[in-house]
Image (cartoon, rainbow, N blue to C red; front, side, top):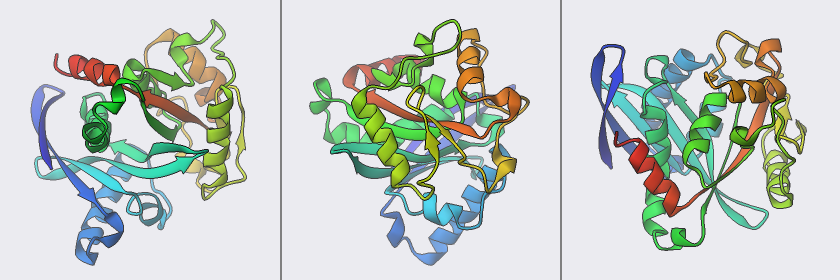
Amino acid sequence: MVKHLKVKTGDQFKSVVFEKYDDLLNLDAIKKQFLSAQIHSILIDCWGKFHEDFIEKHVLAGNRLIMAKADDRCIGFCVLSFKNICGVDVRYIEFLAVKKAFQRSSVGPRLFYLSILEDIKKSFFRLLHKPLDIMFITPSMRALAQMARFASFIYPNPRFAEPDGSVPQADELTWNMAQELIRISDKPNRKICREGLVVEGSYADAPWLVYGPEEAPSTNDSQMKRFAKRYLGYHNKEDKELVVRAHITMASIIKYEIMHSR
């Protein structure tokens, strides 16, 4: 699969090419080494240095990888894993990262869209009455806000937050799925709260990756900022992130296409 996208960065338009990799565990050593180096470069640019085994455990162990390139350089990636959580088939976003120069473009949303495109095609008619279940864990308010724009269901949903930034507790199934996701993770003892599905302690062994007020990927929306202050604590550089569950339906796909065809 090779897909193209024109994006604006600063005063320039760039042509972005997307490539898909399946069956990541069976990639040859040379291809793995190349992808690992490119992914490392993206992570350093947009976030920071992760532990040495992070890419092997959380990226190259996934089921599907989408890489974005501009000017023959890798600028972003999205890796997806297939999981069954509490009896629900889930497309789990292991990681999505985009270099800083492209973060406010449509590269991130397109990476996500292309990562599930094959599943959309396979389940085209099913999506009319049964959604595709998506889950991910993120400390990024921007990632949550982008998903909330076209998902038919999302929890937590900052767009429905109260004036103090609070949201209702997660429904029973979403809560059980979030707890199970943490239980089967490589850090199963992290604390998770039902209200907001806030996870604490993900970066206890890598505190330099915790977002502070200056570098946090937030939004300009005042309602979103109140939500972020309550649950993510950027202002205090708190080690918190969110478990997110979302539904993608045919209406979601149409909404996405309309928003990104402008």
